[in-house]
Amino acid sequence: MKRLFPAPLLSLSLWGLWLLLNLSLSAGNLLLGALLAILAPILMAPLRPLPVRIRKPGTIVRLILRVGGDVVMSNLQVARSVWQAGGRPPRSRFIRIPLDLRDAHGLAALSMITTVIPGTIWSELALDRSILLLHVFDLDDETQFIDHFKHTYERPLMEIFE
Image 1 (cartoon, rainbow, N blue to C red):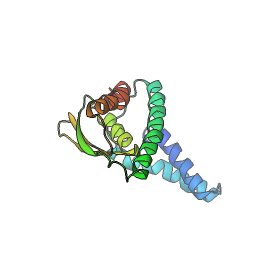
Image 2: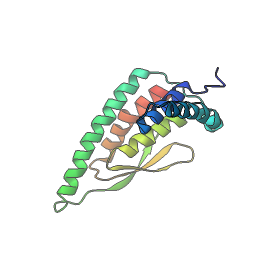
Image 3: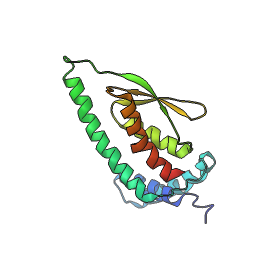
Image 4: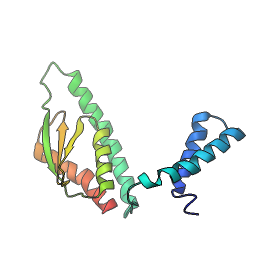
């Protein structure tokens, strides 16, 4: 059964997405969606990284809620900075954040979180994964930002993936 459905949740999601995008439950769409849902994970299985072991699923919910709140707050801060552009210019800069997170899945999640939050851009990751170079749109206190970043995003990801 594992050979036919290497990623059953992915197959179910692909099938549902196919039906949703086509807005039809016709026999042809049901069959074509099922075919796609079965074949895509089988053909892409060699490209998948190592299996993920999630250790604390409850932490995922808290992290998602925290990231959602930070996205809203950051949007408001960036909008205010842009709106008041005639006042003081933003204090943009690159900062180096030392990382303790080493898991590839955790680093991928951290990069997505960083990308989704307005005002931050993931610029570079050291080859040994020990330092992240991050561009911040408007930064008051570098030390406080690094502490917030590590406590709010890196630590929960370490709990989830390591």
